[in-house]
Image (cartoon, rainbow over all chains, first blue to last red; front, side):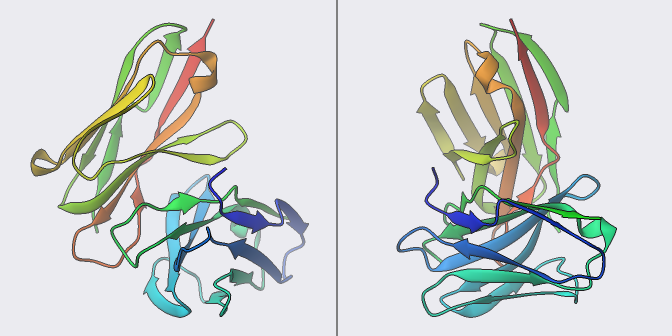
Length: 113
Length: 110
């Protein structure tokens, strides 16, 4: 158990819908990262927050957004869902802003039908 | 961006055999991690090893940062070692994100 929690574990929804994925980092970790794992793109970085502020952005679609709350949990919002958004979404956390070990949560498996 | 190549892409071993997985990267890094993704999809941290050598039970890893590669050694493999092994790096001096290799899929048979 990494100490990072993600909910829900599975999510099945229809095209065009909007979903929210939730992540709670390990106790004491200030950085939260979101990654997407799809069959065709592999594991890709989406976005990072550090202590409530956005710090780095990767290949995140405009239909996706995220935020980190004062209690340091984070949410990833996916809207206008398409079939291609079906993937495993991971949250990771680390103590520092960069260069430190990242610990991954169990992931949320999203299926868009 | 930084390139991360893993080899071999696939590996089939008999239980008890040893193996070496390799990760090459194209630029200087300040973070390198090895993960095991089990059949249920969970990513398990194996090593945080931007340089040097570490050992944890039957697993050990070595990163030679100056030559831009890392090796993961699995000894006396067990069926529970099956899954996909990923190497991920964070490029030095850039935003803190991990760039993953495409993985080595390991199958350990009885």
